[in-house]
Image (cartoon, rainbow, N blue to C red; front, side, top):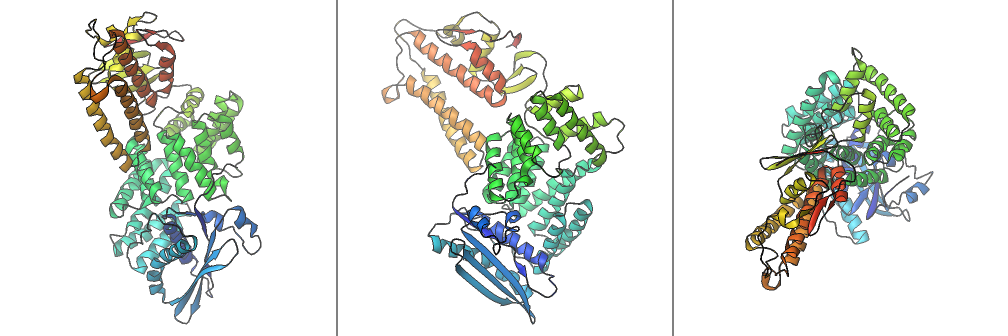
Length: 592
């Protein structure tokens, strides 16, 4: 089992014990445990074990599990009725020697207990800080002040949401709407409504798809408006933005949700799935492994996520091995399609088609039992519910099995016919291998277009540059170009700061690469005191400038079309003369 090493301090919150006679505080105690885990998770110096794992720990009979999980501290709590009050005990235990580091005892009324809870998370973390002498980097925010009755309604609603059925979602909405009636500013109730619609939506009620999507999106927006640190609402919002094709907004919401709470294993798994759709596979794999590390006793919970991830990464055997390890039927109706796609790319067509037929049975059973054309409807549906930003290995399988092309893959990469470089106002529309890419005009693309329109024919760098030169040597970079490049450096610096603030790691990486490349070029082109260096001949200046801008253009192409970038890198040679020698015969249409 792949895991990432848990760093910092590892804390596990054990289920609180309900010692009342009737045991009717279970749902309340469950809510307190959930909240305590969330609040502790917001401290960057702590890693909090998932409740799915801690609920299975039996420290009395098998303490070795605690050691295997690398837990540093255990938190235990219990409630007991005492006349008209409730006695609440909580302990912080050092897992190494089982010593009690901190013990708190409180006798409170049911109402005052809620107010007391607001201080518990901060108190526990303060004790941990004193014990291990660390600096906590982030302060947990308290729950919004609200009446206990409102909080109680929210807990009951969430208890229904977790059951996952449609009837449960409807019952949950009754609780959340009652909470909003009593406190219209209670953000959690709107998050609950969003989750109930998200459940209905992700459970694939095809007949109510748009209603469920809109409800999930609108209520998540309202929750974030009331509480910008509601990480669950942000995650749901990121998901809905994917379906709207607004991928930058989606990744911003997902990254912010993770920054707010980097220790909620289930939410991390959901973020991972969304990042897979957005094409951010490197970050998705990191989060997938972290989710497993935070919930090590239940790694199978995240197998569907891992299968989708490794399919997108081209690790087809790993995707299949994961899927085969699943002991129960995945909740994803289209999960067999992911397995089938992996088999297809391994050229195991028999198993690929078996998976497709398994999917058709599930589609007809759970999505549309009245379909007149199951094959057609199932194909359309699986494309609709998987909002990939870029072309996916899933699409190739669907094209094979459905015997028709995937006509709409993303906003950036639409189906195209032929191979072409077409200049359209301020952008280049480039098509290659049935993928279309749109890139803002840069000089290197003009160079590439000239080269591919004249295959096997050398073109001098001077012709590509269109430069006027003299025999005495020329400036490696002229004054106007120097000013433009320097201004671009300033612009990139400002954009880098903006990307950092927005937690947009993909944009940040691209900007830093462009900044480094441009700085390297300017360093070579400018001498002491910022003056342009003189080249010994025109060839040096022209060769250097043309090479740099062609490489920069190919790098830009690689962001959206790696196959084309690879082809151009292998086929274009730069120097005093540049030439396009395609590694395989390609017919290009070039319109400048």
